[in-house]
Image (cartoon, rainbow, N blue to C red; front, side, top):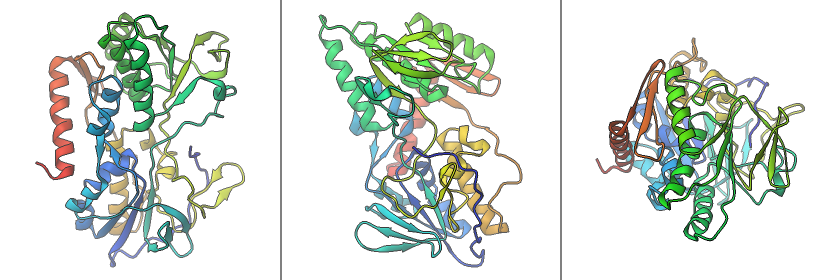
Length: 378
């Protein structure tokens, strides 16, 4: 996984008078929403190229797939649809970046020049992030294929009434962690069995951006459904089928689902300079819109839609004013909604919140419209 950076790039901002080339490397969540707004970037004076071999996975349906609502193929979206929005698509992988010349080498032997570069791949779990993790029966992460594998394995056990269900621990909370944990519970409920699920998070609230009342309602609901919720806690070691937390307590865990908001650079991408202390550093010529740089900024904690909006605003500001850094940090203004797997979703914006079946219907309608728009079906 990528690491936060302390080294500030010494980027020469592209001339606003010229058409700037933005290259998006990877099929991460943020790039999905940026790709859908290529027309906006073209109006601002950019041309956009997406470089990836992997399909997009619609972010808002990952939890529902884990809980049995969606199938894997329902989530996967062909990146070539970026052409409908005015972008270009290259179904290849980037193997080397040349920051001095702002050039990518692709695995088909060709090169691609860029003015601004953004790296955003689905995050993968690091089995060495906590001592002993590698001894777990299985480690999963937020990628579609990994979640699908976890669901298939659990369904095999759930379908056998005589089988003993292993404990699943979700590490890392926030909205995505809550959604994954709730849908794991829903998967067990579909089979009429209680799947042992725990959620371990360092935050004081299950939903840090929501009000206390919303968090109390959510905690009570998840508790009734059987979730073991460990807040203000961090896993320090894994051994013999259990996690040791920083307060000395233990949580049973046969399978680990690691939820990490940090993005990662494309595997095998060479040429990124390194900082002695922090690993890969932003080289000269890389855009301050690179996801690894966003990861150290206030918008890093925002959902993918807001991260995409922050990236686009930075690019617009760069070409208009020659400064990619926003004058003030972006604020979260949109409603967020979570699929809790039991047909009663929750939505919030600051101190405002609501829940119920009608939230599910509105969320479902919005999600379908978003996918249809990207695919050009609306």
